[in-house]
Image 1 (tube, one colour):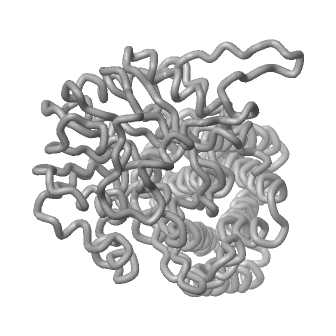
Image 2 (cartoon, rainbow, N blue to C red):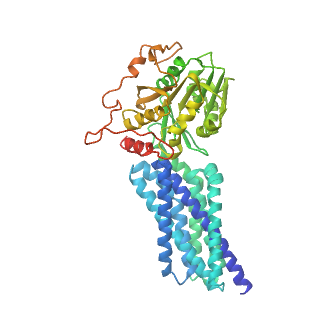
Image 3 (cartoon, one colour):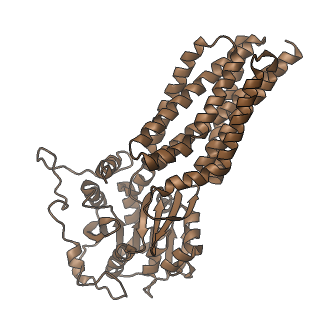
Length: 516
């Protein structure tokens, strides 16, 4: 094989590795988009992988028809991947904002299948081209496949540690598409003598490069305007962290926090939620010196805890350090939480709550579970029998646990499954719910090793909503929310505990909230 052909074959291997990196980044990007826009990360990543691999299979099958002008075919494919993949995230936000639920899923899944098909076309064409210039077919196949698989690993790592945290979803799509264009132009230059319409391809490639570069520079701002339509109030802050998308909105003094599109609080009524979460267990606990808060990175639960003089140590465990930094440094959030993190009694730990409880060696008088609803596999483990058993094992005698437990009205079976799961640990439970205008009717489960006597609750700190006299009414549930759950045929539903092995709560949650 001549030196010129050897150089060309090496470039083919490099091209296969680079486009494989781009392909895997697009694949995981689509999974992340599906998780953020459509919810249920495990479901979306499963569908993404399935559709992408199906597309690759279709592309490999169709590649049998591409036997001539292989370089031109490869360049056309790369141009197509760059254009469709580059604008995928940008357009998905637009579809979600203007066409609504259902259309976004159809758009995303179609995009995954199309990009997967184009990706499946790439490698067989490169293998044929390597064979055409003199590389033995067994060697060309092995080397191109090696470049492909190695590129897949690199692409996944780049997305996790570079692209998503540094550039966000929209800009990442444009940047990866630009790499596809550069590879296409590089291959075009390498095989320029074989291209019959060199000038046309060069102009198209240059035009796409400029278009995608403009998207990388300004597309995120335009996508932000699409995203603004998804929220009723103006967005005043947005950030894509390593763990989640944080959004703050504000309208006429009402500050709202959203994590991955889910409302966490409204400043107009959050005190109802946090007073109930904190003061009921604090009032009943025999001691309240050592307090543990799981979640609560906004600092609002801390604000209520700090109304008591008893606590000596307050440990807050929140996975995302950026959320806590925002709660500390954002003037509006800091004002709302009354600079709760400045209290010297507060110790913040950035760790997964499950891992923290597994490794904890201390005991707590009050444990507050202020975590997002169990709408995916990651959060589900924080609503399992195993997790609640860990809480029980680190609860001092006479201690109290309070768990936010979603809505007993909108997700009745989910609420009572949480209560049943906690009860399976051997702890006693008591149920509370109240109306929070921004959320609707919301529920909590109080748990203790000892029997719970709500008549002993005495709210003796300053509150805006909660009072001692109000407590008994919070334990009363209507017939349509009281835990007597029946099927359509009238038979009673037997609740089963939610466990790591059988995470039955996710499907129930998704079904319950589908229409809200």
